Length: 100
Image 1: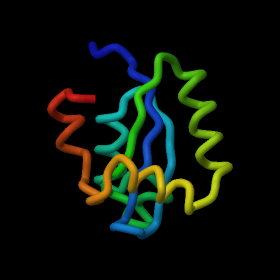
Image 2: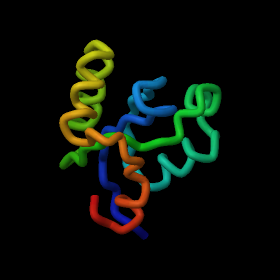
Image 3: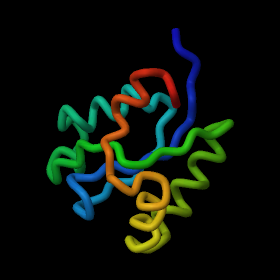
C-alpha cells in the first residue's frame, strides 16, 4: 500500500479557464477522479487538467496551504500556475511517472 502523500493541487478546464483548488492525501487517485468527472464541481465544469501541485510533509500543512490559496484571488492562482507551468501543460503524466 502506498504511503499517504499530502498535496494541494489546482485543476483547470483549459488555459485561463475554470479552476478548482483541492487537497488530498493521494494525488494520483484524486486527479484520476477529477479526470473521470467523479467530483461534483470538477465534473460539472470539466476541470480535468492538473496544472499545479505542491507536496507537503503532512496533511495539516496541506490543508493550511489550500485555505490560503482559496482565500486568495483568481489572479494569484493564475500567477502561481504561470510561474511554475507557463505552458499550462497537463501534469497528470508527471505524477504517474512518480516524479511528484
